[in-house]
Image (cartoon, rainbow, N blue to C red; front, side):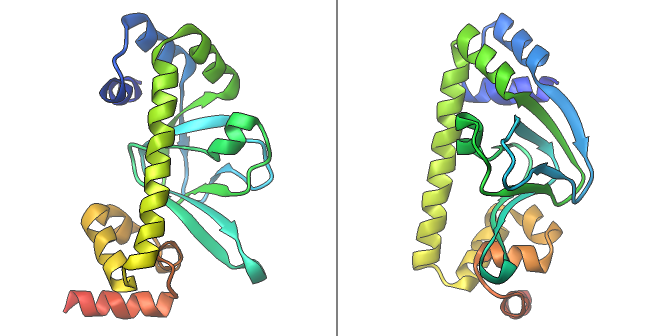
Length: 190
């Protein structure tokens, strides 16, 4: 449990009692590869902190095509954030790509932390800001980088994802077709 407390301490200062509340309200959980955290249409019950493993967030587009919007490695908070905050149906699914270890907090316990601590709102603001920055960067990448440049950027910033995620999921995340990703991988390896 100290991993979640140490991570939050890097984001915002914590008083001792706040660290104790984190330990009290976050619950450790293991998920096997392919298990679902949040299903499209469900009201998200938890926010998760990914301690180890890889998670993908996706929706289905036209003709049932899977569109991967999020690929997360360890050290990130995730859920269908807007749906969690408003307690509305999730437009996306979050699924374990690999075996995962997470720490989760329920909506009810998140509300308790919000009422009883100073750090919680600072943490929520930081996480939401990071999500916004990430989304803006992805939009810019799609506007200004070629498919090869997007792949090289992923290799540089998140090599674990490039090595452990299926070609289909990786191609979807990068906005290209799997055969194109295979060609790019061959070109980059030369």
